[in-house]
Image 1 (cartoon, rainbow, N blue to C red):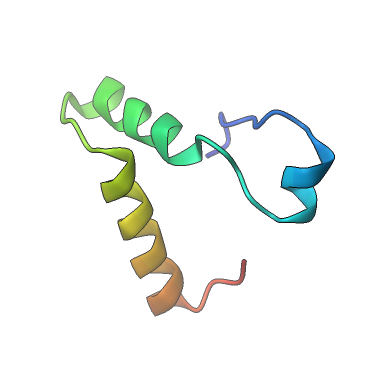
Image 2: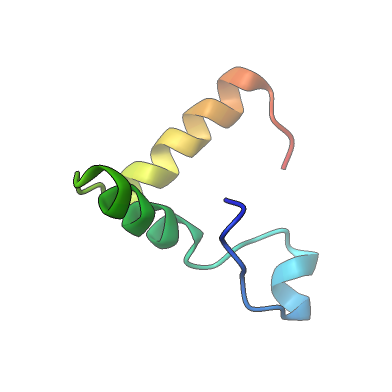
Length: 57
């Protein structure tokens, strides 16, 4: 996530949303491991981690 730099727009920052983040992570996983994960799979896993770890949005 350190390499992810969303387009800075005021509306996305105020909503704490990061468009295309899951696609970026999906591409990164493929580049590093050679295994394909969809953006939907990545988003689902991040949500699981957020729920179990008590992460704040």
